[in-house]
Length: 429
Image (cartoon, rainbow, N blue to C red; front, side):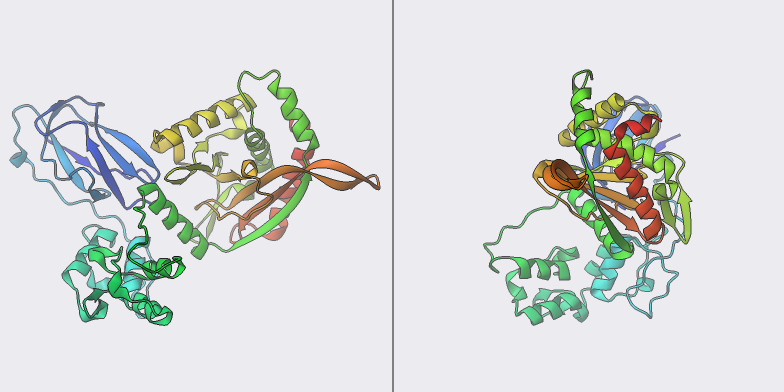
């Protein structure tokens, strides 16, 4: 019996995956567990293994093509079997989930991905008029609908543009005939107009950057977090003198270089164990407190921002955390992270101290409830026993989801974290 090869879901915010390259060609013999293709999805490039042994056949997705999650893209046939013996079925519909409407008159029961909802909002399309291939309206469904319905609602003369884009262009006196859009079928959307507005010169000489999958997914998730999660921020200055001394002592005996981020991950694991509400998630009017403490570390790479996860950080030694962090950063920059490297995070830390930043407020990494931003360690004059003393100081900023964490809980967590930084050996008690 033939075995279906489908586009896998390897990330929480994933609607599609891009075929980077096929490692096997049609009619090639494959073995179960053998890599057969490379897929770029969410924030990683992953080798997908064969689920059975046999002959690869009926490849329907080309290299470079974006394919909806769950779609069958090839078959593995048993010896002597022909593709006609088993037709490729449609993806199993997913249970519908409520999505945000684009206007008051859109029925709330219509289920759509965030990207599809944004396209519907942009073009003032009732989602009820779009027939999804699967259980919910996807980006691909919206693109197909738009390409089949180039009506006057999105056409301005010879320019394809959404109503919102036309309105913004009129307000900013921007001639849309000079530009092409990034929407389906070349439609100009509001983001294109905003980019033109911010451009130092509105001309065809402006450079257009092709966005990587990593950057597009990062942008989508950050936009979702910023627009849907009620953020508030708590700032705390801490004395880092004991932290600096502790790291210097460790460097003499550790088998691997220990960074400040490694130490902070260790301290965070202790603090989260004392304040489990910060290690929680908001889901459909319910707060889910995670039992595992999995700390994500924000890593800047060429194509965007990736957050590999140190799983079970509370059970690891400082050297184990450092080895894990060093390995993940190396593979992140090489584009070799696997899906399990970026999944399951319950809290994130982001450190820009190495760039000379004193303090910043980060956007929460959904579906987590908080993120800790760390600035540089810098000498400042502070009062100690009523005397002005120069001390190495550090600024922390805690971004919280107000649906999960209130000000008091956030302040108590930050107080515990500050106490551990100012006296790191307290974690041994």
